[in-house]
Image 1 (spheres, chains in turn cyan, red):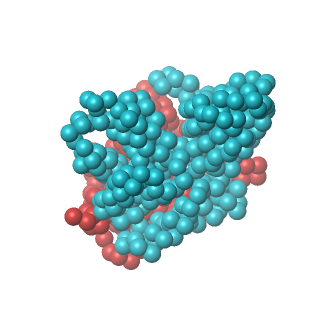
Image 2 (image 1 turned 60 degrees about the vertical axis):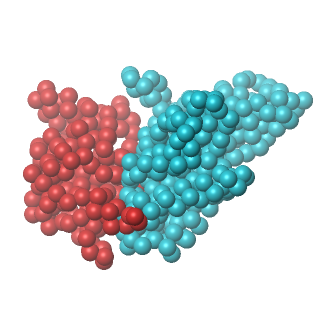
Length: 280
Length: 188
């Protein structure tokens, strides 16, 4: 049994919010630079240059990368041998989010109620997905998830007969219909299988994978590569202004599913991919 | 659309001839006042318009920027201030253009009704690069609260900008950069 203190969780959650929103994650800038070499559109190249420049200004001059500092999305893997002392896990995360967004001069983008729409005033509550796992560690993964790309999400229950071809069609069409709205070049998260709710969760979880890392199963790694290729043939380009750089990665996550169903969900992240993970 | 990018300076308030000289694909650098408004502020503006009440700023010749900035750090006028997605304001834009708005700034494509209104009443749609909140926030010299302060980030502010970069996405001829450019680079 390991004890983790409420205050430590809150402190880490706070830091993650403040750091992730000011630093592009992983190798996004590297991806922009390599895309500049292959991008056919002059305007597309110019957009990529501005993205690189923006990341530098944000880092050096202490501005958030994007004014939409997002929903505070947390995926949490809680070891079943962990005891949390001093309060609840969810309260600790929300305390971190509240302090991080207020003290980090980040935007409050959450409303209390979907129809009455009064702002909560500190960007809480965090959107938390909790998974209980073996062991004595607590893994917190944070994603500052912009609303513009979230609005372009889609879900469909395909028939098993639709197969990989049907999945590809649905994913490519979702990206096509989204056009410039989700701030391409995007990261495309695809959930396959599970139930209706689990499938949507997978699509978001896919966005937390190390950028561009392939699926461990070669069958799905191949499908990811084919999807990326087809998406980049759509012509949408950086910010939808035309070009060959529409997505920088496609990540697929799967779960077993019912004999009747082939659920597929698409959740995209904008080029301002802001993610951070810590293990306590 | 030409392959080289032409750059034009814009100083709001804008006239018919200012906007008529612009073509899709042109890069513009804006100097002067622009007004922020997004979902909630548009809803409030329309309540005033429908009630025939005075508006918080005169619309004629002005530029509306779809943005909800982050709060400023001490000593700065504003935080990150990149564009939000414009289609959410498509239901409001034609009426505002008819009432005198000469340019809107946002990201992503516009509905045919908005494009038609721009053609009919001479206005343009400019895209700023989404997600470049730091780069664009730095071009804001001054920010003044104009209306609906209680809306927080969604309040209407008058921003004084210098060399604020954007690209003409719809011009007064009714052309649309999104459909034209995407068709050009699609691989069939």
